[in-house]
Length: 205
Image 1 (spheres, one colour):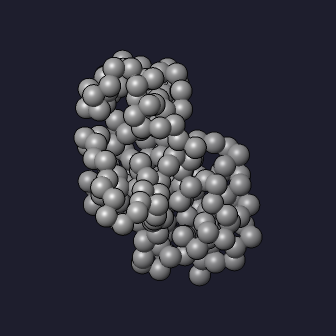
Image 2: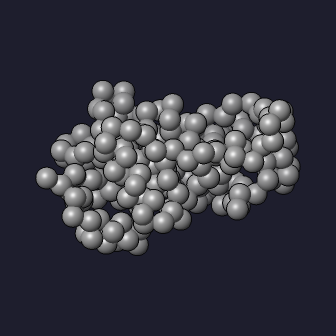
């Protein structure tokens, strides 16, 4: 019997690519595809499935919002985040929110399939964080004020130079809300503007 997957990603090419991979895999099948967070939440609640592969940034609702809503409704459908965003910045949040895994969109096909099968087997799949891999023993870690999941999403966009209106569209919120989140995270991190923010955090690769 094939394991049933729901794909939630707003990029048609990414959905098509995942579809091709799954089509070549005899023990897996895609039973539904969502192109925004609202659709993803509805499908997770109505379509019988064994796993949802969920993007972080989508219109209407972000992947994190979808996951939090599902867990609040006691829906235990396993979720694997499949994202272009850095694992270091998202893994702590998605784990706390109840996800079973996180994998980058640049991962090899065999790694993606290994993550899917591991989660279907009742386990989790999270990459080791870069800070943990490269930090020398006994080296102190720079601690930063905790950002909310939404502030962290806005932060990642700002580090990439994404215009505020595009951040709003991608996260399914208003430009005014983006401005508010930006101001909060700047205040928390003790910087004045985006240039200072990039200097503090470093630009993602």
